[in-house]
Length: 176
Image 1: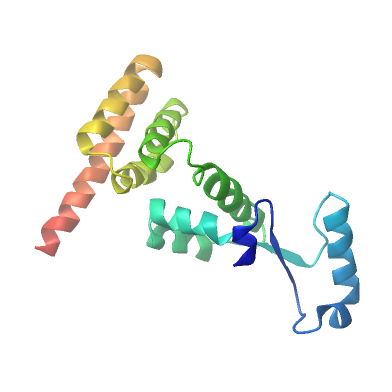
Image 2: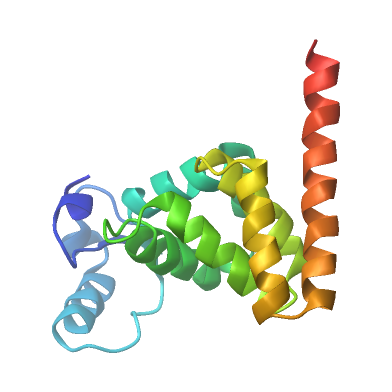
């Protein structure tokens, strides 16, 4: 998609328009142009499409099944949040080449432990494995959190990680 290749570009779909959007939905197109040239909230009736770069990274790190479930559960209420995390977390932060994905996973695990986000922690333990961390390295990150985030937080994190590892081991045993 062209918008993925142009820094700062975005794609905006005009609902109910096809080939001649300016003729078919003149009010919506005018509102979109005004919103583009005058920063502010997007015009009503438009849906921002997340950049494919963010979605590609999100699927690569979290796995297509997880992302598909999240997208399938999207409601009108949560749609803007899904767009936000895809564009900013996955499309800008996780796509930066300043830190590699292994390092990002270490930072993410630590932040999730520090704030007690155990459901997200389980998801990111799996992501850390996908990003190339070993179980031993994940354990080392969690041990580091015991010093800086507290022993109770690290204790809970080790339990979450062990649950993820046990689940993966059960899955690989059943594949044999």
